[in-house]
Length: 115
Length: 117
Image (cartoon, rainbow over all chains, first blue to last red; front, side):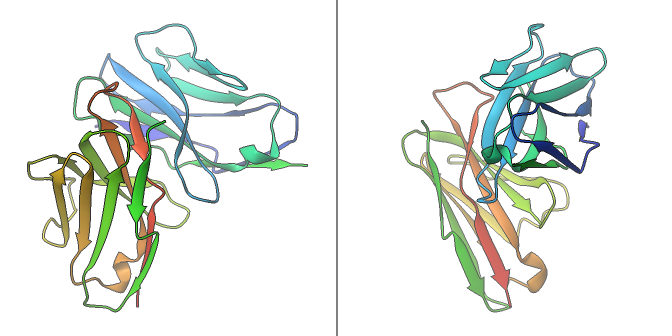
């Protein structure tokens, strides 16, 4: 079974600074997807960024980028120019490709952006 | 973008009663829907996967007779918590996969907070 580990329960960053959230995973699969989801206080799950395992190039979405290290099974999220609206829980998630489409979530990191 | 709604957003019920939660895909056909449960300050745990027109697939440890899932149409799935007890109090979230979109893309509903007294 796949597992996702987020080793940082809480983090904080000053507005406009950069922060990196860690995520590691364990799988024997070769083809899969990795995701970062944001859950603000409203509790609506919002997809931040997605990475296909077969792609070596790291995904980027505006201020959000990932450092995907397939051999190390590491998938960290970098948030640049942090904004107050980035304050939220961030969940790393794994999905096996071509399978049941189940998402396996990590325990989450609570990020607080301070003014 | 694709929108998923849930109703109700919040419900309070007495112990022993049943509660139905609806999950709707508003602008796409959801061939597959997923139901999650999230306890306070914890992660999302998948409860079951439902495919339109077939029986739901439950995760290990989830009582199928207690959490009844029906996916009768391509835009609606319902979760019924039968004979609810205080320990069933939680935040329930559904997600839906667009049958015409990428397999890996799921759209989440806003969640339903259930409180059983």
